[in-house]
Image (cartoon, rainbow, N blue to C red; front, top):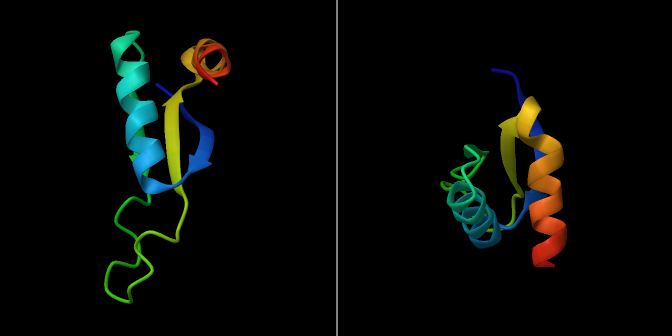
Length: 67
């Protein structure tokens, strides 16, 4: 399994995207979701949504259809 970045989103949007992909059978995880909680910039740092390399094109299609 090789993770690749699907995109960078605000924290709430990233969680919605992970849920949407999960409903389609695509495993996705977030990186940086808890970055800089100590200095108050918790919601300002983009959260990376990561998927398996084999799922990347399908995940992008799903997000394009949703937009």
